Length: 412
Image (cartoon, rainbow, N blue to C red):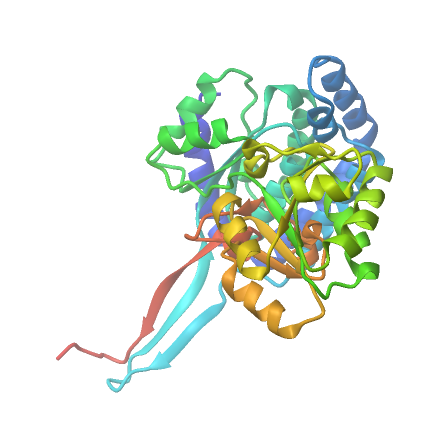
């Protein structure tokens, strides 16, 4: 099917979705879960074939591509969570009665057609469909060539589910092509596609942003920091940092740089470093950090601005919270940054002074995903400021329109 025809059908599906109830959309999501369970063995086989066809991929990339039992359970859970969320469509966001008697309101509505271009992770396929459908949008999915077999199984199951729920089949579409020209064609469909969300590396996001007139919701690097304040509690700091870095090293909200206050470095950095080394993390540090941590590799200027997506962590000793925030402002990507402290004053200063999509206190950076924010499935974490920032869930894939009710009301 030509890309322009897919886009046209998606636009038509989005118009039909406008008339569908929230109950129908939730039913479709629940049916998706059942369909995936039915085709689980086929899905796992397809994923094995994808992995076998890509022997030269890096270990971190392969990990993102693989559908394990844990990932499969996660996919089902996110579909069910999205189904159970309050309906984001048709909410009255604001309303008032004017002196003329005109009743005006602001009403949440779907964006329309959302195209999502992404690499590797098959769970993005189900998450994206869940978020789009919950918010009443039609979605066009363009996964990477490395996951094409897996995505074919997922897309077929989800399309069957929406049809059984009484919704148009083209609510969910997968571009079943692996050539780069397909993306180029999709980027030209500004007559039908209302928003594009690229999920991948800088090169992909830049190519999408520069190659289309369609609005793009971007997520650049996840250069995430934890700042250990002078009063940090070791019992909190060690597990929070280890979880931030090691729970999944290959994801965007994994910790990449640790900032330790000079006032507590001698007390806290050795046990933190020991715990990270036990997890196989390579440490790269400033001269002061290297002096405190045996075997720490001297960090280069490049390290401070690197998203490793690997078991590597850079460590810098800083003199106070202001220097920590200045480092984050200079090297950070505006994704997720945290502070470990027992001080309410320092917490407030850090939250106010760090300009990131998520700012955490005494919590793992891995908690900045949508599920941990009570948003169910998300389609990514936006580092943009317009129109959504942070985790992008169903509410973030809605816009609004104005409504007004009069009684023969005229403008003076």
